[in-house]
View (cartoon, rainbow over the protein chains, first blue to last red):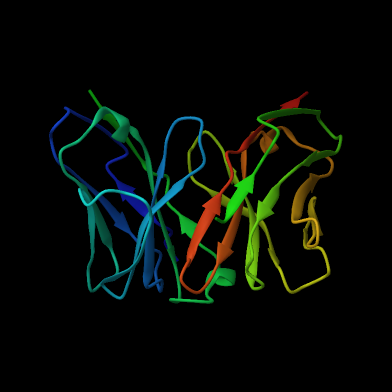
Length: 116
Length: 115
């Protein structure tokens, strides 16, 4: 059973650029969530995908968007990068839409994005 | 608003000793779950222990146990026989189904284990 894998592990971008982060969910998991973790803070929920549709979104602007593919892998896209977007981006997967929390979230090791 | 508060930014414990990390949460929901996650320098969030709100019995996982006080909205983590490998950032988190359907994290407690 493979866990959650994220790529790339580190990334440096320039302000105003666009970035795509990728996540492969754990085998059998059909729900993927993305979190932003600023330095010294707890993760903040960005959005969640269930069976290729967004089914929850946190307080992030529209320039944060995502996709989920038929194999349940996912992408996080951020347009018009700002300096404050520098953070660790975590992907988490689980089985189930609602009430599946006790099945547990499996997290990846994250992508460290630095915007200069 | 649903919030999770960890009031101890840093804690230190001697190897083999016991340490308790504090967490409080605020919600009007009746059905929810609570978690403690460990984040070592490898950055991956690792689930330490979880608790269903409807269960009165405190969860235990080997050296890790919780003290769940539902009325006080308190959810502390006790680590017994601390080991060097326990050194990490620990996050308390809550999950609510329904419209929320997401994990809400506290700001974390950095645990140092002294040999």
